[in-house]
Image 1 (cartoon, rainbow, N blue to C red):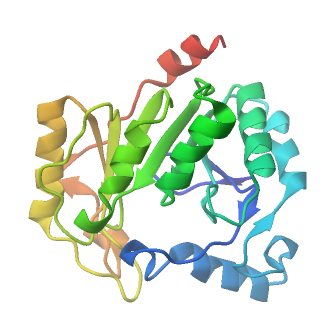
Image 2: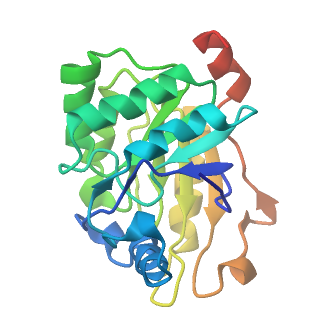
Length: 246
């Protein structure tokens, strides 16, 4: 567990680490860079650098947090990676169900997500789990269709890094959209009209919109305002937990 600087969450929890690149959004993966740095520092959790590794000991962590938190699951991995066992993913879900935190899970492997929903969860999702897919350009918009077919109570899109326009998004059954530009030394530019267009689509569809950053080599300097305004809209935390019985 680590306090997070990611604007839309509070903590990151990594019961698995490691991943592989599967689309253009992965090209300059921040998690891979961070894993290499942590490995060089001798952090045992990254002994396998960025190779998929399950961490059973991490399953105990959420039970130790003394107050309710908003938690991004697997900032350093993809929970639905093909090399992570069904059994371990189910254990992660059991921990999330057992604890009163709000969990945000994000994947690029939407086909396996839907398969897991139908075959393992059988549509029975914990109310405190928000499920999202990454949608960086039009080549991967089919991920939204797989997400939409799941029984997750809160469904969201992470359009970050946004590397192309996303016109005519089908936002049916989508609750929340995050948009952000790529950051780092080799970051690809996000055009302002791409972000503004998605914001307008969300307004029209009554979908909550969160603008994370413009990105670039100096993301702090670039800021996170659109036309002088910050957009921090999120699904209601209290309503999610009330429905879960907390």
